[in-house]
Image (cartoon, rainbow, N blue to C red; front, side, top):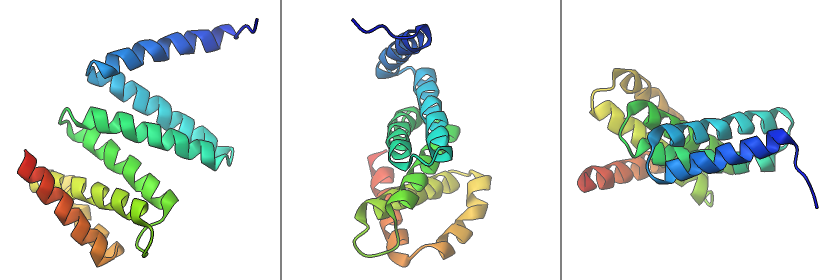
Length: 152
């Protein structure tokens, strides 16, 4: 029978408890899990273990999306950051890079929605972001924002 080191068992129990709480909608648990994934992402990037880093980025995006669903600006910003990171990994602004384009478009749509809701900090960077990406990304972001606005 294999035995695990005490730290692994403790972390496993903590993760299970956090996951259960996050599944019940506890936003603080969702944030902790997102942050754990972002820490693991940084460690893997520093170790040049990019496939593992992207797995952590995907998981971070899921927890960030759950936390952002509660409506706090800081969670929306974290979700946009996770999406932008994934877009960078998968590529964007070129034909055939559909997943990266979709991720970047959603990140921009989040920024546009926050600016429209009066978040000044985000509003000041939107023109720069708009100049940095292709028009089809901006158009897709506009469509995403309109769909979200219509649903709310």
